[in-house]
Image 1 (cartoon, rainbow, N blue to C red):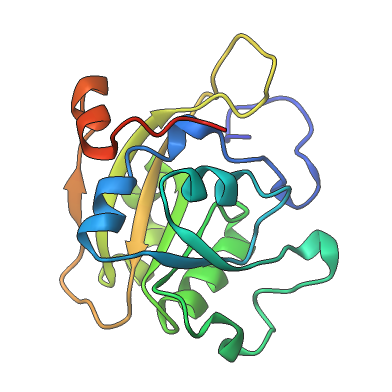
Image 2: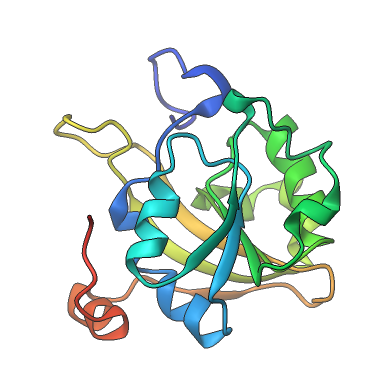
Length: 186
């Protein structure tokens, strides 16, 4: 699904979030007091499933495939949750408007390619990005031997924040396990 892939992309960048993407962000969500979330790009619901395994509660999960448009829906749909958490389409013409919109509604955690933070196009959004949590390479295609060609990161956006992000590098597997306990994929 990255920029160096030669295969055709899935419609609407519909790549389900693999479990290994989730444990790195859990300590940050819990430290922030996030217990509830909305997932406006849920696809088949994998991210909701993984976050729920760690005790977070989903207030709302929809997707473009079921007729929901996160860019045009009423902002009131997002109320009542502590955060917006999603793996959005990585296509910049969709992802950038989502960053802009979501960050003005609630603290927002988005999973996408780590290289983005080092591009000119990030300059517009990086001031209100408060944290970048490294994830590394993920296996986006279940049943394949190889991971993707691009590293991924979680980005936290909030319009109330200024001054750019704190970068959090990858932790060892043992350190990550100590943060999140024994939760494992369902």
